[in-house]
Amino acid sequence: MLSQFQVVVFDAACTTVMERLRRRHRQRKRYADLMIAAIVAAGQHVLVTRNQADFRDVLPRAQLAN
Image (spheres, rainbow, N blue to C red):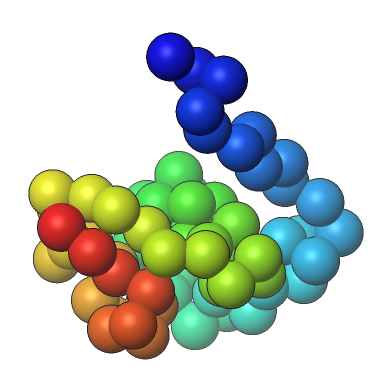
């Protein structure tokens, strides 16, 4: 089943986005959520989650799905 999915790594582009997100959301967001958002933003992916509330102010609406 896992062969159907693409593994996404945390690379240099993600690091750049992560630093920007940490400066903007440091007090209000968990580190893990910011890492996930950085991967999504840097790779122009769509985040599929039941917990959209944690990402609404971090990612554009087009990059979130339930």
